[in-house]
Length: 118
Image 1 (tube, rainbow, N blue to C red):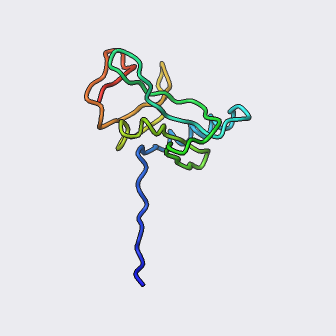
Image 2: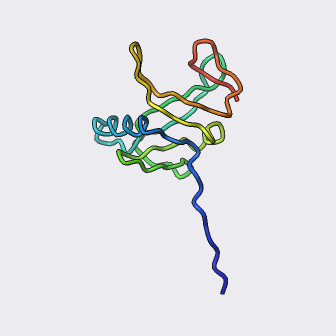
């Protein structure tokens, strides 16, 4: 009898400690029906795609699911190919706070930083 070894597939997006902490903060004050936070890349902006992070109320079979200490993080199944190898962080500076993305698939971005192209 032959046994096969399976290996765990790495997540499409790596979350920094800051991103995980922000997800925990969001889930602590989430609406009652929220089961997690979801990253997607809707078509928007002058470069074509944008990053969008929202509460999610139901699990979708094709979405990637990442369990973090503070809550569940989902990646939209249709967006995974645009995000493979990305690093997501939460950055706070003197003038703004927000999620940032280091995306090796992005071939360019618009001048305002709101959208990217692959």
